[in-house]
Length: 170
Image 1 (cartoon, rainbow, N blue to C red):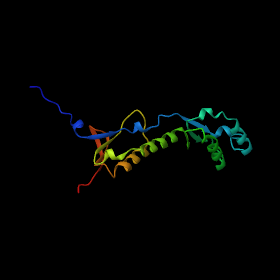
Image 2: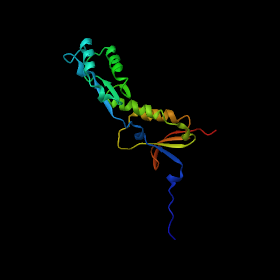
Image 3: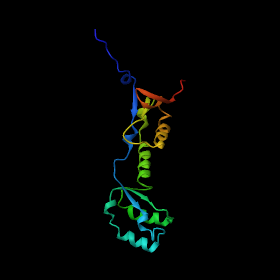
Image 4: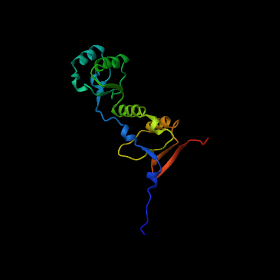
C-alpha cells in the first residue's frame, strides 16, 4: 500500500503576506532641484520662477513625482512650495525624497491600506525572501497593523518560520 503524504503547511490555515506585492507599480518621475541651482550652489528666486514656467510639464502628467535635491545645497522652503504649486494640478502625487525614499513611502502607505478583517484570529506569516529588498520599516508597519488582530505573526516561509507574536490565551 503506497504511503499517503499530507501537506501540513496547506492544512495549517496559515496566511502568507508577501510585502513585495505592496510596492507601487506606477512610474516615479524625479524632479531634481539641483538642475535649477545657480553655480550648483544656490537657488535664485527670479531665475527659478522663470525656469519653472519653461518646464515641459507633460512628462509629469498623472505620474508620481519625487521632489529632491541631489546636490549639497540649502533649498529655501518656498522652492518646494513653488514646485508643488506647479505639479499638483497635473501629477498623480508629489512626495518629497529621492526615488528610493518615495518608493519606500508608497510601500508603507500601501501596507496601511490592508483590510485587516481577513486576518482576525488568523495565523499569519510575513514572507521573508523575495526578488526585491524590503525596507525594515515595512516589517514594523505590518507587525503594528496585524498584532492587535492576528492570532499569531511569524516571519519567513510557512515551512520554516520565526515566531514574532502569539496571542495570549484567555
